[in-house]
Image 1 (cartoon, rainbow, N blue to C red):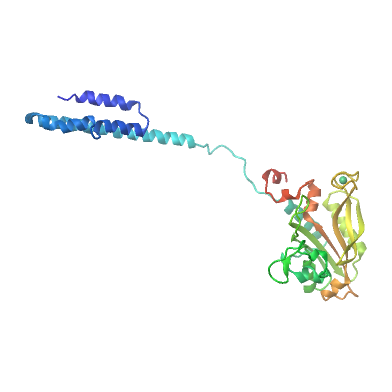
Image 2 (cartoon, rainbow, N blue to C red):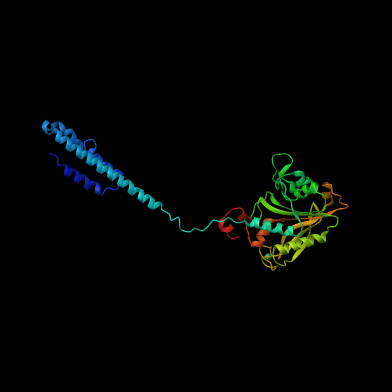
Length: 337
Ligand SMILES: [Zn+2]
């Protein structure tokens, strides 16, 4: 007869060390697959004498059931073990404290806010204008004639709509305010401007703050005072300030403002090109033609205006030597502020 017990014992021995589903399937087929040990026993039933067939069949069925039971049990064991190993691999201790990711203010925004705060404390109001600007406001009404080099395609981003461009300075905001409001006017216009420049100290997009004061009695002396006060407050020290004669189409007289180099304290270094001075802004008395363009009587009123680059001031204040660092979003840079 059949030795059921030894078949089962042999199967148990075989599957005991198996840890992969694939190997288990091979064993399964060795017993109950086509031509398998148990399958063969079933097919041999015809050779068994009729009086023993019932008993034989019952026994073979028990073996088959036992084999299936053992295999299924083992399959489940392997599946659970695989799951356990997967969880172990993917396990993370969610109670471990991590460095919190807290957002903070970009150095340029911080600088822009500081500049605006200083001018606000002196009575200037903040005014804003569009970045896509009328060519008329950006150039013509600021006394910049059509043949002026600044209007060249090399310097200005024109948009494909006649008469519009990306503003090259925040000065057109002055025009907008003078067209809308009556003097006295005291305003600063912060914002993005665009020029076809790209090198370590120039970016095609950068920030400016423009200032304008118009009244019956503002003069060059008032302007010098406002600018000197601003620079001393901004750099938090009594920096030397000098005004150099310059030229801008929209101001007359015009001046460039320099401060004593904050890096070398006037001794001469790479940043100040060994001169001991750093150019920080342009300024001047508003050209009478600009006032008249905006319907302001230039016999009665006069004004002063100034403009500065925010990136430039930020770089000098923090000692940053490449303008590109502001726009790369490198956390190693940003986390220092
Ligand atoms: Zn220097």
